[in-house]
Length: 184
Image (cartoon, rainbow, N blue to C red; front, side, top):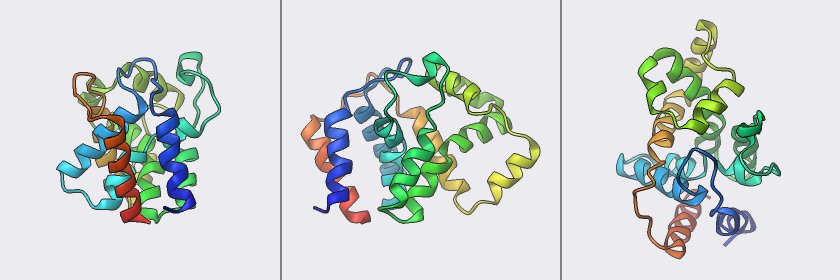
């Protein structure tokens, strides 16, 4: 295993148990569920990895607890996406960088989407800029990874099922390691 692969896997091994208020699942469970949704929809391995790692910025952040609960946007998409861009291709990093923009885009273009948001996603939406302008929507759609970011964002909201039983932690970490290795 490469150093970068070890760092990512160890991050989830050490901090994957963390929860954010209003989500109902741990960071590792959320990553696993999101990865499973991508896999079940036959996404490319790189988009599957982006699904797994889209919230890695929360684990990299030095902020305590749930930043949105005290009015702070931790910019996890930038922190995580920029971290991943140092290790992986743009097919992994860009959807991660854009998944917050995708939430804003979906809220703007599909008012029903708001009903799918968790309490923390609603809190963070306000801090992240809320609805987009027409110009922001056009700019978002012009990006070559916009459709991947939208897919990732939809999986993100579905991957907060506290009723879904995750395999044991070692199996999940092994699955994460395998997809990381494929994409290196």
